[in-house]
Image 1: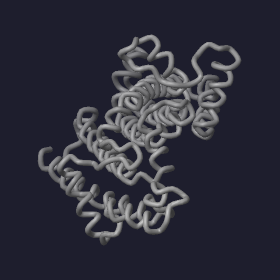
Image 2: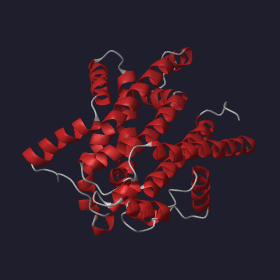
Image 3: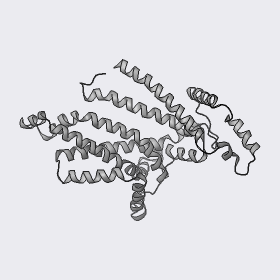
Image 4: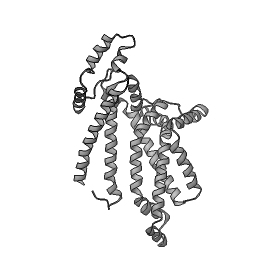
Length: 313
C-alpha cells in the first residue's frame, strides 16, 4: 500500500506539471491583452506597453512560467490585476459558499441516488424502476441552468417559498444559510442523482442475479440483509467510482450554478476573472481545482480496499 501511494504521489507531480504548462500556455494563447484592458480603450500604445512591462508580460514565456511556478511553491499565488489584493486571500474569501454548495450537493446526490438505485434494483421492471429510468434520462440530459431557471420561476417567483438568489454566511444563522442553498443544491444535484442512481441500479441488479444471492434467499435471508449486507457491499466499487467522478465533475457545475443563483463563490470569481483577463486568479483556481481532482481520484482508489478486501496494491 505504501509503495502504491508513493508511486501515485510521484505521478501526481508529473500530472500537475503538465496541467501547469497547459494552463499557462492556454491563457497566453487566448485573445485579448490584460494590459490593454487595464489601460482602457482610450489608452495609447505607450501606456499599454508600460503596463505590460510592469506586469512582466514582455519577458520570455519561459521566464514568466518559472517565475509563476516559483512564486506558487512559496505560497504566493500573485495579486489580482483588478482587485489589487492577493489571489489566495480572494479565494479563501469565496471558499465558504462554494464548499457549502458542494458538500450539500454531494450529501443530497449520494443519499438520494444510492437509495433510488437500490429500490429500483430490488423491484426491477416495476413502476419505480421505470420512473427512475425516465428521471435519469431527463435529469442527466437537461442543462443545469435550465433546471435552475425553472426552480427559480416556480419556487421563488410563483410561490415565493424560497429566495431567488444570493448567499447567507453560515455564522449569521443555520436556517437562512440552508434556505438560500436549497434551490442551487437541487439544481446542481439532479444530474448527479440521476447518474449515481443509474449506476447503483445497474450494479445492484448484476449482483442480485448472482448464484450466492439466490442461495442466501433460499436460506431465508431477510430483504435488508440481502440488499445492504450482501448486494450493496459487493456492488460498492462501481458505486464509489461514480461518486468520486461526480464529485470531481461538480467542480465545473459549481461555476454555472453560482452564476445562475448569484452566489459569491469561487465559480463567480472565475467568471469575473475570465471577463477581466485576470491571469493570476484564473491560473491559481485552475491549478487548485486540478490538484483537488487528482486528490479525489487517489482517495477513491485507496478506498477500494475498504469495500473489497480482495483488492491489493
